[in-house]
Amino acid sequence: MAALDDVFSDDITFPATDGFALAATLYLPLGARRNAVLINSATAVPRKIYRGFASYLARRGSAVLTYDYRGIGGSRPPPPRGSNRAPSLARFEATMADWAAKDVTAAVAWMRERYDTLPLRYVGHSFGGQALGLLPNNHEISRALLVAAQAGSWKLIAHPERYRVALLLNVLGVPLTHLFGYAPGRLGLGEDLPKGVFLQWVDWVMRERYMFDDKSLVALANFPFYRGALRALCFTDDPWATRPAVEMLCDGFESVRPEILTIAPEDAGVEAIGHFGFFRPEHRETLWRAAAEWLEGQD
Image 1 (cartoon, rainbow, N blue to C red):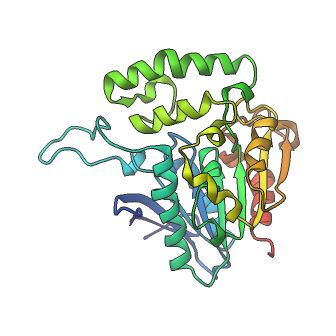
Image 2: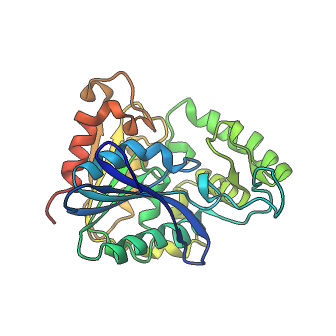
């Protein structure tokens, strides 16, 4: 375990519900621990992106875990035995539903078991926020902060970005994914994605109500189980998580009354935030502080 800006950090692994090893980083404060916080990544985004925010929360007294979904970052499958080649995602089986059911569910259980006396908080970025409603154990979470998390139907993406997305996913992404056996990140997706993850994502994006229209997704039945506090952050310059898309996701949490905050870049004293900018360190004294204070609030 290493010291990092008055915070201890440790790279670890923990098992998903099916035993698959997930790479993670645990951040611990030097002093007393008052909360446990699980940070859940966006699609094709490795956990290292959240390092600054995780350290910030830990410095304020939270035990924080970041981790990579299977097929992403440190949770890619190992290379063939005796090979020096980088591990390939070709023929690696995973879906977005697997990420929620096997990976996020296990991360919640790991934090709940390890820090059973602390309130458990949840930060979900984009897909990480979508996954909250799919978890069978989401009732273990007392507060959830959704950051640019949305029902990502292509029709709710801002114009003209929606047409670029439809072209990228269907005309380029799907054929190349079938050709290579995975979705190459160089398409502009971020990291490489397992074939099943990408194809399920495309299927949801092209539906009117995103995953809510997927009748095969039995985990949708878990949305009503979440009864904790829920705040969703929506940024005016984010073409993906527009206000209508954020509202559609929040409407799925029928047992609670979500609070949706719409934030413009000028509110934070910056020129742009977008879909990923919340996690930049420049927001330490503005967006991060407000988010931390809410996460640390009394239930």
